[in-house]
Image 1 (cartoon, rainbow, N blue to C red):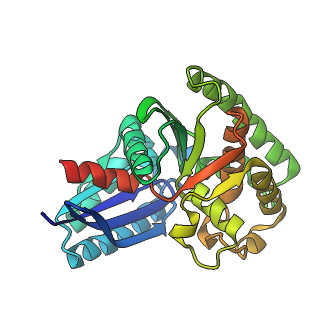
Image 2: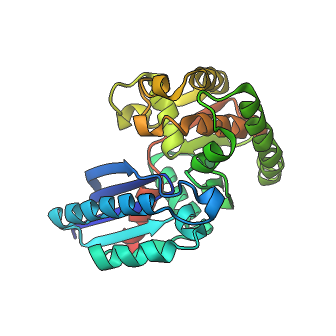
Length: 308
């Protein structure tokens, strides 16, 4: 039986949508799109979603609702993550989305977010034992898979938007700002990863990165003029190469960083903390390489929707 399904991820930095035609033989992608709305901008200071971020997110969701109707998407799952979990006024946005688009936004728990991400990554890659890291705008998820089963899920309230606002006020970042950022990341990630990997096989799991930070770093490494999923998916980055990319990115002011091939202009102000966080995870987990997955939470959400 054929069914068209759509998934929308209302993230802290980006609102993404995937529409697939699902049949007994598999899934065919009909549409994939994203818009950066910076929903979590300013939340570190106030604990509230700013009016600008809510209005832009609502505008994008209205556009997405039209696209769902155009593609006759019968199955729909629209979900929010860190920003909607934490903001004291998230209900205001959720209510407005329903009133103005008819879409019901479900706020995922940290565990649900991790499970969706796990299912999306492992369906697209044969990685039975791996540590999946998803660096988001407001939080970062860690999913440890051993022999194809989820062994542990962890979420920390650190994401690229929060880190940029708290640690990198200067343009370009100053050496002491970068040092403070790296010390903060090390103090949080070393004990976390030590605990997370305690029961892993001796050689350690493959490190897999999904989400906007990992795919952007891959696109920069590949020097892509336009994003190409087939080249980014399964691309491998060494720790040494990531350090080179980080040093390059952090030297440039924002205006120059925006011109780097592979870097989406609206992501240029948060890619430095994103790269720093990724490097810190690799160092804390003693991983020499990062394998990038273009598939993740959207694909996992659609798998769950198709099974329901």
